[in-house]
Amino acid sequence: MDRVLKRLLIVLVVLIILAPLGLLASGTAFGEWSADDIQKLVGYVPSGLQSLSSLWNPPLPDYGYPAAPAGFIGDSLGYYLSAIIGAVVGGGALFLIGKALTKNTAENNE
Image 1: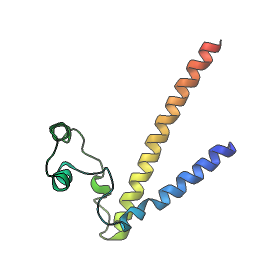
Image 2: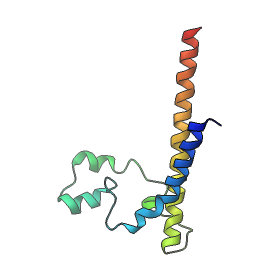
Image 3: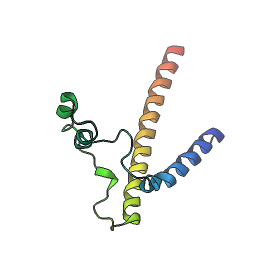
Image 4: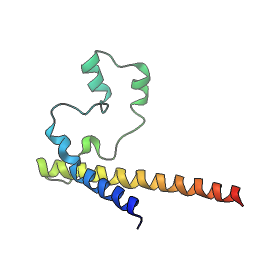
C-alpha cells in the first residue's frame, strides 16, 4: 500500500473514532438545522427551504440508530454508523471519479 494512502486511511480511522465527540457539545451542529430549527432561530422559514425540506429523509435521523440502547453508548453507535457510511460512500464516489478521470486521460494519451 502506498505510504500516503496508508496515512490518509489512518487519519480517516482516527476521525471516525472521534465522531461521537459531537455528543458532548450543547445545542445543534452548525448547518444541520431542520426547517423547524430555523423557524425557532430566525423566526421564519424561506419558501425554497420549506419546499425542499420534504425531498430528503435521512436513513439515520439525528444520527440515531433505532435498535441501539438509550444513553451515550447507543447515541455513539449512531454516530459511528453515520461516520462509516459517509466514509464508504464518499470514498467510493472519489474512487469512481478517479477511475473515470484516469481512464479518460489514458485514452487521450494513446
